[in-house]
Length: 131
Image 1 (cartoon, one colour):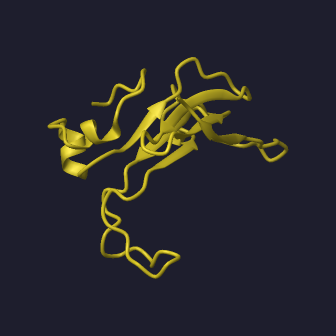
Image 2 (cartoon, helix red, strand yellow; image 1 turned 45 degrees about the vertical axis):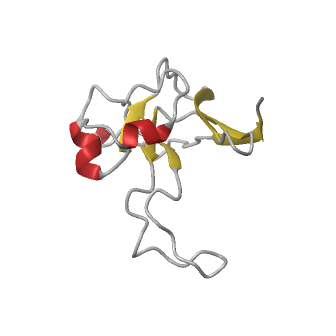
């Protein structure tokens, strides 16, 4: 359920028996970007909606991505723009970022910035259609 090398429905994995997915009631997982190279914009994912034919391609210079499937949106979230309330799984977030705990893991890409350093990352969300 954590293999996203090809397109598949997120809902299939949310209902899986994979320990961490079951514990979190969905995805809230970090994925390293295959073939990541520092400062190079790389395609990191794509979301599609079969009903509308809309898609979003995600490109980033960050070394990883967290996928969150709105597992706990119900109850405590702010109101929607129309005054309603969100239910669990009524959203998905793809967050491009550095590796969690990278400051303590020398084998991960370093998130540290020297006092005279320059920090620049880019994430592009490219919206379109498919079919």
